[in-house]
Amino acid sequence: MTFASASDVFALLKDLPAGEWVAVSEKQNRVLSFGPDILQVLEDGRCKAGDEEPIILRSPEEPLPLYL
Image 1 (cartoon, helix red, strand yellow):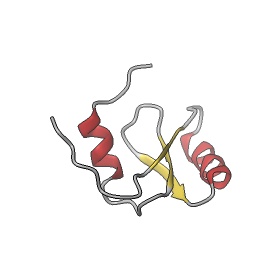
Image 2 (cartoon, one colour; image 1 turned 90 degrees about the horizontal axis):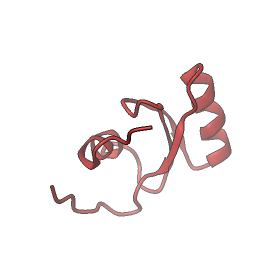
Image 3 (cartoon, one colour; image 1 turned 45 degrees about the vertical axis):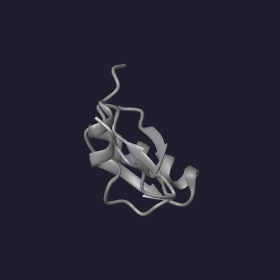
Image 4 (cartoon, helix red, strand yellow; image 1 turned 135 degrees about the vertical axis):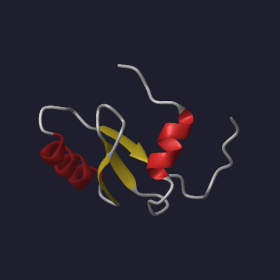
């Protein structure tokens, strides 16, 4: 698996609420689900991902600077 660049991940997470669990597509190009309950996010992400296995991340509690 190849991981997306930090700027790509930042772009996915930038509009999500702070501290939420996030299910991202295996290709890391879309958010499948997010919320406070990791198990629910995983289940919702799996339903929307089809054959892919979603990647689970957590959005930062506070905005972090991004240096490129």
